[in-house]
Amino acid sequence: MSNTIFFIFVAVIGGAFVTIQAQFMGVLDKNIGTIESVFITYGGGGLCVGLIMLLLRGGNLSAFNTVPLYALSSGIVGLVIVGSIGFVTPRLGLVPASTLLVAAQFISAALIDHFGLLGADIRLLTPSRICGIGVMMFGIWLVIK
Image (cartoon, rainbow, N blue to C red):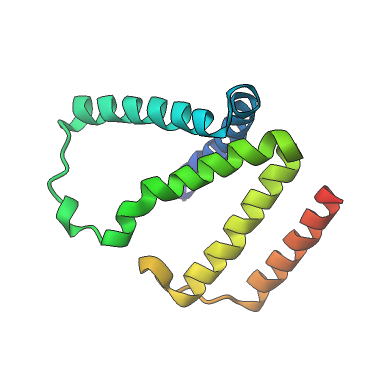
């Protein structure tokens, strides 16, 4: 149970930081542009994680060839995520942008889990999950309306 509480805590912190990053990227986007804000975000993050990786593990990428090829596109996928966050936040506002982004995550996650896509374990889309997504869609409508 203590592991579960820790995982929930980490997820909540991560979720809060997604919102903070969205706001920061919205400010960057509004002032210098979408591509430039993505560059600052990825460049700064890449530099930090590169240094941390070298300091903590010496840059151990020895198992690189065991990773499925499609997983190597995660950096490009991240560019789409970061770019869309930075682009929509100053135009829609933080709450509507975050709501739409999270809703899209729920729906795509449910489909990926249900069909076992991209290496995911199959976790069927149950009636309660479908109802939850429906309630969320109603909430999205209320937020954006």
